[in-house]
Length: 142
Length: 147
Image (cartoon, rainbow over the protein chains, first blue to last red):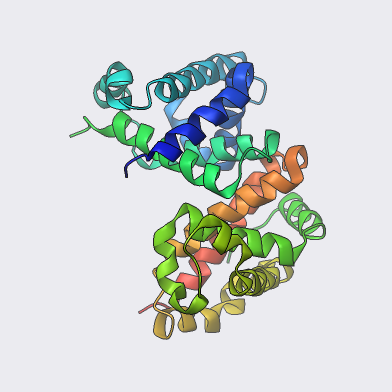
């Protein structure tokens, strides 16, 4: 799945509209993922995963920062997220299926807070972008 | 048989009561065809699907979207018997339409996003859970008679 010029423009547009709210979106996406797909909590036995948890907020900030970084280096996401890719392959080893689940929740959060931004074309681009990020993060798994 | 808590049933029914089936159905199907363009393979006779604008404005897409979401309403009305509700439709999708069941999951995910964009904060995490569970159950029921 290759990101077209239009896709890149659309994705950068989304993140520029999200602006300073990215941290909150990250936290809310995680909260929704834990609520909607309880099996994802198995990766966080060391966390308080209840709604409003400070740990989830902090982790959401990290997730959002990675997505913003990828969007800012959208021509070479693999290089931008190389360290994160190593981390997921060697230490975290989150099953690849879960990236789709978090991606779905991130799209839901964008839809809730910015329905006008998430036109069908932008939805398509953002979905592709999230797939590309997931691909990079799982690229070194085996 | 799927177990639904009283809260889940309430969340599903109360949201469904506010859904404009024609609009949401049309939007969900259009988004499926735009976000996952390979799904257009099932709609070769729908005419112009050459661009997002064409897809959104396509009357066959709108009509079929309405039909699909109307059928979804049957699941909402028969939460305790979704398997039986979709038995014939499952056979149809396998034997006549030849649709890979993965597509039911894709459409379900798209529907969730359409609902989220329409209901915003009312689409709480608990609501999302109940509805994501429902679309999963419907997808499973539609795939059940495949052979």
